[in-house]
Structures are given as C-alpha cells and as structure tokens.
Amino acid sequence: MAGVESTGSNPDVTLLYDINGLAVDAPGWFDRVMEWTGEYGIMAAMLSLVAWCWWSVRRRPEAPTAVAALVWAPLAAGIALLINIPIRGFVERPRPFRDHRGLEVLVGGKTDFSFVSDHATMAMAIGAGLFVADRKFGLAGIGLALLEGFCRVYMGVHYPTDVVGGFALGTAVVLLLAPAAMALLTPLTRTVADSPRLGPLVRSPAAPRAVEAGGPAPVVEPGTEAEGGAGAGPGAEDGPGTAPEPRDADGDKGLAA
Image 1 (cartoon, rainbow, N blue to C red):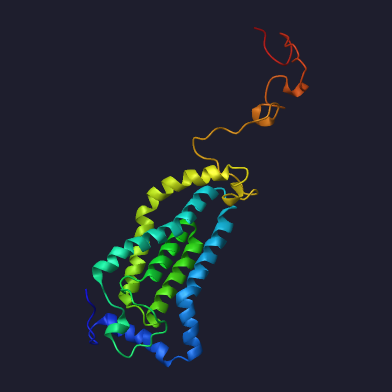
Image 2: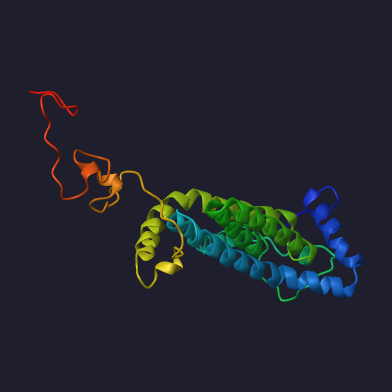
C-alpha cells in the first residue's frame, strides 16, 4: 500500500485536511501546545492515570486481581508496538505530508511509515488495560487515547485511518491476550501481596481481604461465640470451668432416662 488517493473523494484524505486545517488557522502558541500534547503530554497523563489507579485499587479487597490487570496494561502496549513493526513494513504507507501538499506539519523528523500510529496504539492499549482494572479509570484512559488520535491527525503526521488502526490493534491485544495474561500475573501479584516487605505494592495495609471461594475457614480462638462460647453449649451459662448441674427426674432441666 504505497499511499492513498489525493482526490477529495477519499474520505480519509478529506478528514485529514479538515482536521489539519484547524492547525493552519490556529495561532502559533496553540499549535505548539497541541504539538507537545500529542508527542508527550497525553502519554505523561496516561502514566499519571495508571499511578492514580494503582493507588486506588490497592485499597480494595480484590487488590491482587486489580493490580494484575493494571500491570497488564503497559505490557499489552509494549506487545502491540512489537506487533506493529511487521505491520508497518508490510503496508509501507508514507506519511501524509509526503503525498499531500498544504498540510501544516507541527513536528519534524518523521521519516518512518505511517500505518499504524504507534502513539494511538500505545494510548488505546493502556486505556483498554485500565478499563480491565477499573471502569472509571478506564473510561478516562480511553478518552485520553481518543484525544491522542485527534492530535496525531491535527499535527499532520498521520491519516485518520492510521489512528483507527492503532486503536483497533491496541484494543485487540489487550482483550484477546487478557485471559492468558491474568492467569499468569494474578498468582504473582497474590504472592507479592503476602510478602511482608513487598506486600504494600499490591495491597494497602488497611485494605480488607476478600474471602475466596473454597478457601480455608477463618481461625476462631477458643472460647469465642463463633466456636460455641458463652451461651452456645451445655453448661455455658455457668461460666468456664464449672460442671453442669445434675438433672433430676423431677427437676425442670430434663427428663429421667
């Protein structure tokens, strides 16, 4: 795929000019803000969101599972970027400013191929991974990923379909590989959670512990009500260490044998 048509009948090119045209008419300071946001700002915000989510899920009963999903988010982003390497080499689509004139290119030095967008792939993979860990943080991450995609087209370095392809690749890697990843990562985070030194990385000391199905019953101290202490058995009303009163045939406490 050497490129795309330069005619207005191609919706990919039409949308490219419409979005990048905003940069042509915008003041210079706003273009510089969008350049920094699209190159570094949104990814920095993503990392901050991951840290915030980690701090939040540590306080939950199911903290090891949530932290495992959170660890999976950046790992999935890295895997998606590796998968994108052969995709770019196979498609070989040039950057849009190489085939189309009149674009406002806000960042230079982009000499590699255009499809699919690395930034869009990485942002959506982290956003989808956050959604697996926590829906509230996930929605915020997906919103940042959509903004990242808009910025890449605004900057004139990607076609809209480059961005859509990145979104699809990042989401597919997260969701398709999540079952296997969680099966490997969850036992690891549970082991770390039980560690005296590393445990706070997974579970806050004040967090309640979830009772797992089929797990061991809680240990009950002797003499407590749960074990059958005061008021739970014969002679309990007489206090510990005292024998029960004998039961006479004519008494009120039982019948003769």
